[in-house]
Length: 217
Image 1 (cartoon, helix red, strand yellow):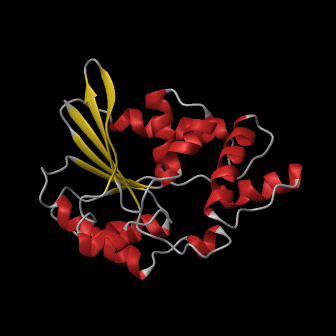
Image 2: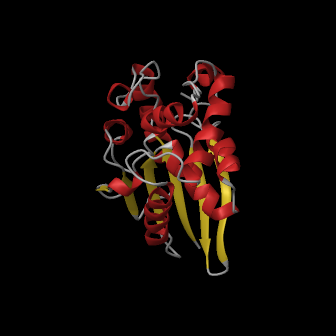
């Protein structure tokens, strides 16, 4: 049996209004990632480590440290979807405003995913192109007998869940919204198929003194 472990990056600049402003870890994001690195070093060693090219991915990887696998392979196919531009495109199409609250964000994410899937809006790539690149990196990583760690973003994790579970774009939005910073998602790779074996785990943050560090954004 093989295994893919998906890691969402540490907390980024959640007050940002654009991708450039968002794409850096907060002080808490650095600490979350250091704690996660300590946890990973207690687990079986990985055969491969993959990481997206965004700053928040690379900073998370840096904070994880060494000792849990070989040097990381940097792969842009693990980069996040272009959510800020997709949100602005939805505003232009039907006037939907960018979200201000958590409740607004839940509604907005589902609307963005459905409109993007219908090709009514577009960011830097189409929904189909995003799905294709995420599927390709997943298929390459899914090798029986090998453990692979992927440092990535919530949208990529959501898309991999869509592939595994046959989710609609709306249900994909529902599953990606609760994904916590530095959370662990485990996929078992077997000759009979690939199975979701763990979702949104934070063993490195679950003690009483670290519960404050369990952040969705």
